Length: 173
Image (cartoon, rainbow, N blue to C red; front, side):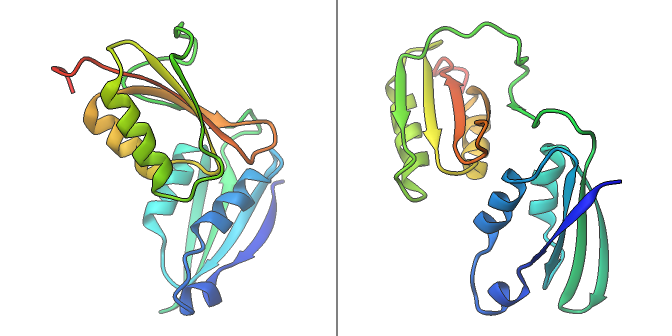
């Protein structure tokens, strides 16, 4: 049976705070057989979609207008799900990165801005490797819109997100 960690972000939300990083840090620290019971003031549909992509099923209970309980349970006790986009497979051979960026000390949106700026200068097929202090959920949409391919996941500590991005030809993006 899956053990659930309790995470209550209702007061943070009521105070106008943004608990997204706390939630993602909690998920990053889970053991493969652990899940989370999230207490929130609304049904966090975008968060649910993100966590489904990372391999979590959910059940939602509305206890009151501003009191929701969402249980997230891993679909299986396997390695963390890798983000893979644009039809690439995790086993595909990627060339060595042309650029290596350590952006772990930067606050959003600067890492995304630096990555997108660097991609504009790269030749088609060149690869950029970056280290980030969080999963770049907003970057994924930008990469997809521009036609770039990427793979990424958290390192073994669960604290550093690693991403490789292959630049695409300017006429395709």
